[in-house]
Length: 351
Ligand SMILES: [Zn+2]
Image (tube, rainbow, N blue to C red; front, side, top):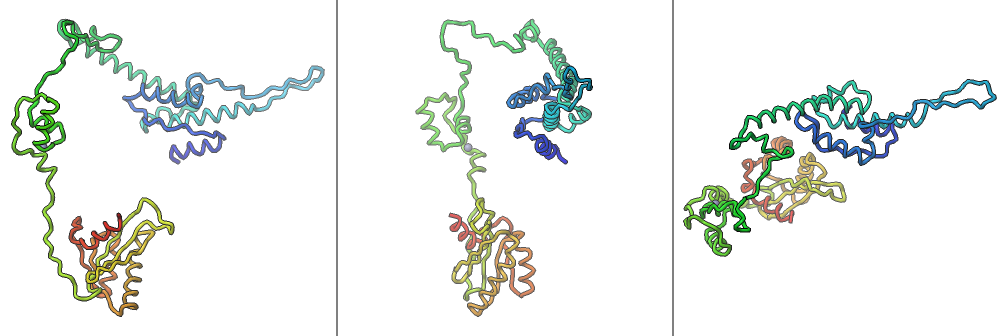
């Protein structure tokens, strides 16, 4: 069983009617402090932090003293409160394990209580954090600014920024670099030159030069489009000589009848459209067989050619077409322009 499954089973068996939400991070070598804070906060929401910080289990048995004159011995019975406490402890332990990476899990494999696991992790990672801090301190000692080491410039672990000592003016400019026209063009999401010049004059933007480099590579790449396709289409003379087909879906919303897709057939000669709704793409073949039969019965005619993109749903159809002597015309991959008739219809239907 995976950890979430074990957790679900533990919740079900312990009558705990809540679930501690995941904390979003898993403990690794680098994030012990952050992990620790998140774990404690999550447990505090459910008043379970005592299980790791300061567990107070109730006594395991209830001792019943006999009434004074009786000679019977005292009796002991298991304490139901202890059993509940133990279940909660196991639950916290399991949840704690779900916040660990596989590497860290090994170190707490033998822990039998939440606190034991917590302390094991603390020993392992606190030492590591201390070692990292020592290494950083050493590195800072060897770094210098002016004549003093960086460590002396630290104030409570933070590097202090001293405010400017010149008090003659209340406003202090930290940067006064002028930018070129090309720089502003890049910063302002590549606008047209006329727009850029208007922006600069309206907002008095500081510029170093008024000339714009003639060709911006990003603009050329970003604004270029494919060349249009030349129309080479010659319509068929008779209905059903050529049928276009395409599948649309899956739809984000299920229809009342439980359908997610539709397949359409468009006759090239008449531009008549037939739409069939499907619950799965695998129904395309049977739908086409039914459609062909309908054409035969109603119009006393047969389909000569079927044009589709090479979508996975048309692979079984292709075998069927071959066995019936119908030509299967396929448009080039990712070139919906070649299936223009049906794509146009599809876009209209989607709206
Ligand atoms: Zn540009």
